[in-house]
Image (cartoon, rainbow, N blue to C red; front, side, top):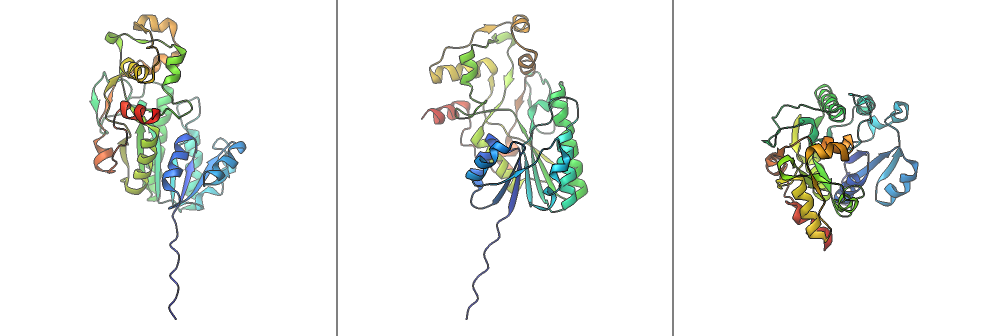
Length: 300
């Protein structure tokens, strides 16, 4: 009598901070992986369960709630933001302490930000560029990256970092570029404008999966599309494609009195991200290589 073949055991992934991007990752991976999703919001537990994840309640600001995480998953996708203040990411520190207690995690991918570079004067840069954070928000991300690298060296886990620019999608709450246009928030005149970088939320989810499968240890990747646009040109493109009025343009001096400090901070940094590692090493073929591609797909 021939023995029945043993079922193939699916790897287990823990998504920490399973918001919009995490749910898109879940759709890509199901049903090949068993996915656990950590949330600090009890109301999200049914949503995560309906999406195909095993929901877990835990709060990165309350380390005592994280005790069981270390032995649950083979891989971790860390999408949770740092705390809102300070120069250190205490949430990542709490997560790594919990993971270290279990010793099971072999791969970890962290969603960082391209803001760690600060202002680069519009230069094109690759991942070898030294970080130069200009805000506490970016310093918290640099701190998180350093903690994760140390965790990888100490534990032997493969830790990869995605540095992510502006995330957009027409079906993404908080990432729909039309929202700013509808508010009429001004943009900078051409002489004062900055280069910005973008990634469609679906391509970012696919980049996360590619890093989980093929990311190299201690390796940084720019999760950015191929667009090279100044900020106002980007929003003009959105306005024209979506039939909305273009935003007014102001000088930098005028913007200083019309915009909040947070809005101004994004207008004070200019850079163009080289994404060759993403495409060559992670072998990711972008579905939306330009913003126009992403807008066209979202409006179809």
